[in-house]
Length: 380
Length: 248
Ligand SMILES: Nc1ncnc2c1ncn2[C@@H]1O[C@H](COP(=O)(O)OP(=O)(O)OP(=O)(O)O)[C@@H](O)[C@H]1O
Ligand SMILES: [Mg+2]
Image (tube, rainbow over all chains, first blue to last red; front, side, top):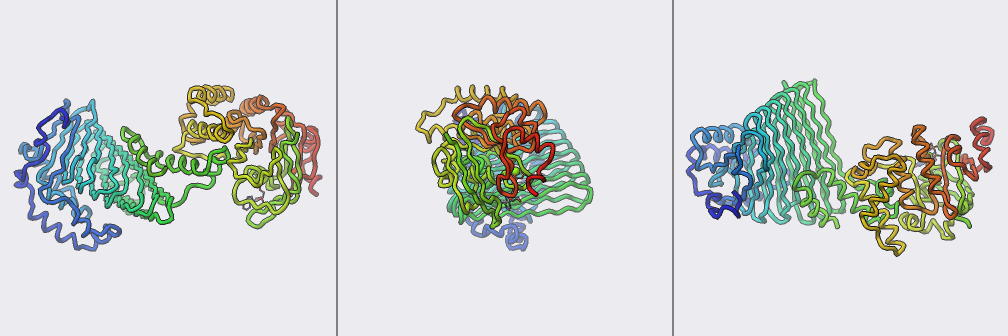
């Protein structure tokens, strides 16, 4: 159902509110009010002033226009919130109210309060074609994705608007399912908030490839919950912050079950007077024995006024785990530079090759070339 | 014709004197071997020639093809025809070997006012050399030296030498870490490169290499100076007696 093949774009913009009956808006509102002023919020929004950000969130009733490709293939049911069955409604209600912890994801409440609708994407079996969602206009866009037991899907999300956008994606990956997820957001002058919360049941596999450019204000929250034995997550991301841009990434990986594996590799470059924040948390719960987690976040500050913040946080409540965490902010390696120039490559070209290579290490999937081109444009 | 003429070279590293009046002249068509104890300054010499930052030349001169080498930036030295095969080649994930080799060759062509080589001919040439060195051509797609074994890294250095065809190749322990077969393959590569208008300066710890690549001159470097030079039989003598009789 792409915008080209479907002239009825109204189906993709949500009319106000029948779904709100099942959403306890009063509770959301009071929860939001309480958490807005909390110490926890101040800590989680240390570098991005929360009130200014809230002020720039999409207005009430503004729905982002989505273009979705791949939702009319066998195995996929894409339903606007307003048209859900009673069973769907119960599932979505329970996911949205039980899973989103307001203390950590304040703006998820605001996004839900203001969004006039949303989408449920229900996936069964192995999909032949990727589901490709493009966010075409300013507004709020809650999307709930359910991968049923044993399902396998590829999800591509790409922003295409310089307006204020709030993306809330909640994915429920049931036993033995596999989700490959590609995300791209390259508008340098937008306010953009996004939360991806992925819950992984037993024996699931989740892979993320993400490319982000700083925005006027961009905040990207990624929360992965390994909730069943044998769940595996591998997250890679590349990002770049140019002059005048702001990029705040909050990554949380929770090992709630034993015998789970997570790998996180994120590379970022600051190439102008801009600010990048990368907060990488690994949380291993008391009963998650034999969890294996590794997070590496490397940053290059290629401009004297590039501000690259990287803060690792480890919370480990059981002994029998493997956990590695590395966060660095540095410059291009002198040894690598010398190797290249000793072969005749000019220092300028050598820096270009090395900085591209540094980001390319974390690029993969169908959006990699688009991201690489944009990054190269910035790096010269 | 002198390819390189090093006179009275004194070099400091972090304020410490490492080379103390080194003299060495290598003419076109010659292969010289440099041997010497660990820490005597062999890699320092190689790095100084290639122009690595952090080495302070406090006295002496280096003329390469008649030009003052020390006045040139490292990339300009490569353009002129200097090549260093590193003792410890770095790994650069994210930059493919293919991309790196092409950028290297293009930069030499550009500096010399030659047309760049087209990708098809380039690939053919690199594959040909890789085959000669028994390197799996798949390596071209991988990051520069990424995940290469020690021996593969050394063969990749020789591949670069054969591709870039320098006037002077400085090989810093290219034989270390090679198995017996790889040593032969590398030696064949170096021998196929040898010509009347180029030269090789070969740093090694092992006489074995010199039976495959026969040197015209063997030098012994100790405490930052050449303490003895001779023919290939000097290497055999060193094998037998060690360095002590020369450095005492
Ligand atoms: N960056 C540096 N800082 C301080 N000392 C250095 C540095 N580089 C080299 N040196 C010192 O200079 C001396 C010569 O080192 P060099 O690497 O040239 O030895 P080498 O002859 O190549 O030894 P090997 O046979 O072990 O490779 C050593 O004592 C070494 O510790
Ligand atoms: Mg050495």
